[in-house]
Amino acid sequence: MKCDLQKIRCFLLDMDGTVYLSGKLLAGAKDTIARMRAQGRAVFLTNNTSRSKDDYVARLNGLGLDVAREDVFTAADAAINYLRARKGGSRVYLFGTESLHKEFAGAGIELVKERPDVAVVGFHTELVFEDLAVLCNFIREGVPYILTHPDKNCPHEGGYLPDVGSILSLIRTSTEKEPEAVLGKPCAVMGELISATLHNRPEETLMMGDRLETDIAFAKNCGYFSALVLSGATDRARLERSEIQPDLVLNSIADLFEV
Ligand SMILES: [Mg+2]
Image 1 (cartoon, rainbow, N blue to C red):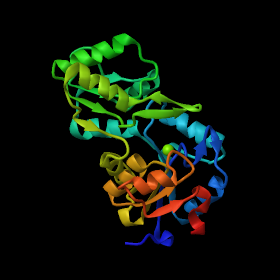
Image 2 (cartoon, helix red, strand yellow):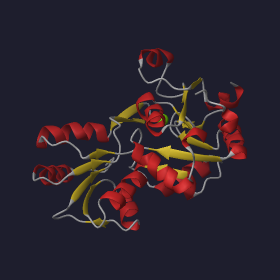
Image 3 (cartoon, rainbow, N blue to C red):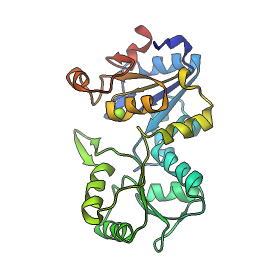
């Protein structure tokens, strides 16, 4: 089915590399987002679980985008939703930042340091060795674990930070155990949460992002239309090599309503 932009009522936007780059709003983003809002909802998604939802709301508002908490979905939301829906009442060991601990505790998740029922692995940019040792011990003893998202690296000031997907390699090597679930984009759990909240129809939803394996694969897993922007992590050569092909390819967000 061809994507008719006029029929889209829900626009899902990746942030880094799509809306902004190195902390700066990409040219034309504000106007495109205004057009999206004239037609329906514009919602912002991120896999990064090192910062809280409020941090993202503040960052987007700092760029002049007039965003409320309801307009932002993070992989932490997906993890909290997963725990509530599938692991209700579980004692959770959380491997993550102080900010992520606050987010989980604020959502009513019981966080424990001993005898957990499940371990959650987030993007822990404040980790000390002890955190890794404790996590791997629980998992080795048979505690199931989930990852908030699969990303191996996170873009950071001209380079990369090792992300949850890289920590997974360490956990596997140390424990020989596989995760029970990997949430965030491209996992459809994020889409389940969005549709339970926004009641968007897949055929009226477009996901825009700069990564094929997360953003565009997520759209495909949820039955949304997809638009790849070449303003971030993916260039044309990489797109041509990939089995994951978007419905639309744009130089940047500015071009969405120009195609
Ligand atoms: Mg991105």
